[in-house]
Length: 301
Image (cartoon, rainbow, N blue to C red; front, side, top):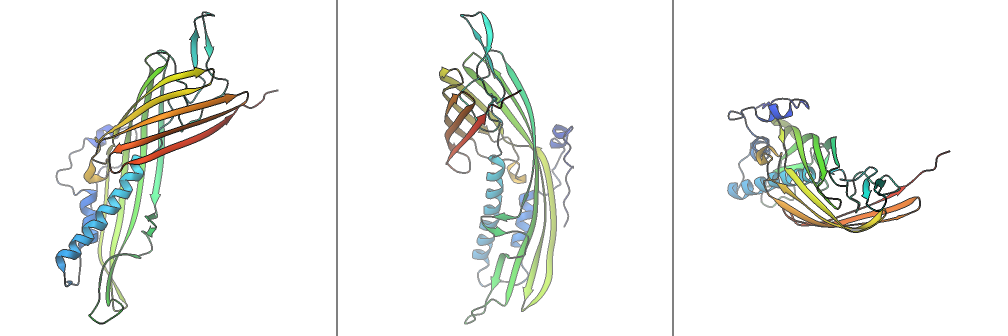
């Protein structure tokens, strides 16, 4: 069985994502085929089918968790400026260039916007410590009563790759409030094979591949600068992920989530320290997320 979907093209990502797929099998269906197709009937077919489905769901969940935690660039990573009403002119808010993947308390400024395009590629070798490529991921194993070792083992190898292009935008609604959005376009490819090892002899039982591309889960976020003193300060924010990606093709989680966060910055002379902490509610799991960064302003001659 071989499944193909349109190749991932950065320029035409939206067009590719809208291609009809009624006659195509999803990535989840192909993964299920690899994990549940068996050559030797087992003593408990129903229980083994449930175990295979649980393995499929675990692999899908781990992959979706990785995709949902792709880093999003900071809304104020560059030099930012604000209007000094006492001077009647625009002045720089901070003396240093901010971190790129960790938020800082400063906002971008009234009606000041930014646009970014990021690209990331990933290859998955292990999931939860289990190797996907060396044939040790066991799907089912049959053992005769009284034997200590199985006489028939069916294992799966998977070659998983993802390419993600993310469009990001941010705008300062006020001098202290930023709002932004991010939309990833994801391409996933999977090649797998199932090998039956019967009393030491190996036989390729199934080969399958699948690919899919399209938009992932849409992200919206906001940040409000509560306390500001030059480049130092404290901000509060939140971001929400909407389930816009196709869950059956592992392009989206299928679950909405929201993450409140607190952001702090301390800037002194040439060194600045930034940190943010948030708690994600909903989605595939509730989790504590935190990050930190140090920026150093270099000298020029």
